[in-house]
Length: 539
Image (tube, rainbow, N blue to C red; front, side, top):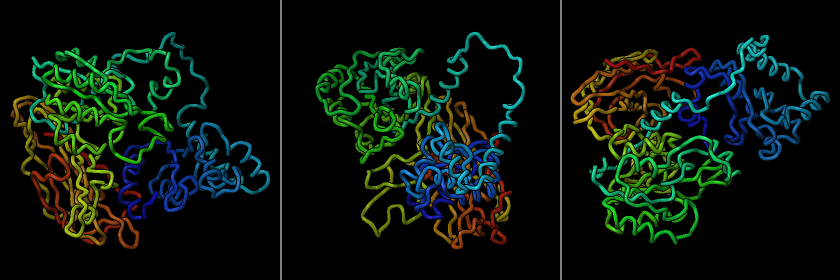
């Protein structure tokens, strides 16, 4: 992992800090990575100084599978498993899950020999026992009757899964073909159109366990996109076309013929999630390009060549380089892995039953050569006159279309705010379209001049609001100045005085309404007591 201390502090750590300090997590797993040559599992600067002393975490730190053993076998900073256990304990790792490869016999031998201080074991044991006591796990067994049956798929869980899926589907492009016309004759093609596995990530039961037992049924009903679409629109034909990740083109003629018979072709492509090389995406499944796996791009281009309008649906675990598709497809829908109710959510968006409201949580890249790229880039990290490479993504962070329209007006902030204070930012949001819908109001900031380079845009707050046609609401964000914290040249975490531009718009790069605030007073150095959470109200 190549990251300097400033990038680590300003870009990578803040989400974890919010999870610990604002979210109140009680258990943290260390990363397998090494950062600038220091494995995280052996780094007390991260697991003790930062996590516990600065952030105030007092739960347990756990190692997953071979996290401790890797200090010996992969990172090679420990001569044996006992030494690896000693390094991990000293850094702040309390529990080795699930095997105990290093924390059982190797650690016991190292303690007996004097190579590892027994006080480190006592510290970890105390932390674990304290947490178990807080959870009531050390209490006398409660007199609770054991249920005869446990429903693992109750309607309430389905309802949550449906809401999550419907709110996360992103309509990336639409030339007007969506929602599909009621009388449209639709062909559904593609390797992920009729596969329930395509809706789930690598740790879902269907891909994590049942991939080893192909003859065992899932045990609960999950619609595929094809099945869900048949409930919503007039599907006249379907064809797989190709597999997710092989070179077999024998199915392309069938897909082409199906598209020619239809008014619209819905082409469902993407990934098969798996672990350690058993998928196109997932833990241990890396790729050296950002093209769709296998011959899926050939399938899409073959269907496009028929002249039938194409609605491209992506069920993926990573963003692919799809500039060509955004230029040529009538509509593009990005669903990532939407879960057990995902097929109905996708079908609902295509039919218009669901008004799409998802927003991209990552950028859609222009090419693999333009990576790595993040919306948090400084000015020199974007297109400039000193480089011939344009890394601008084909779809920005925060982008997402709807079947209605929204305007954002009259962003107001105070003129002056103390560097150690907070400020209120209010904006009016109006549904200017003809149907009800959800808008995700996004508040961005730009620290114009600072002692170190700052990103061109930084998301400092967001809020989902539901609006009827013509309805307006005032959305108010209470923003602590700590959301604008930076790591200065001497590696202090500070809020500096100076001008800050704020805006609200449909993505990180679109400034629909802007305002400016001046942070005044001395440089404010951040302590462990500073608040980072942004709160919002709607009125």
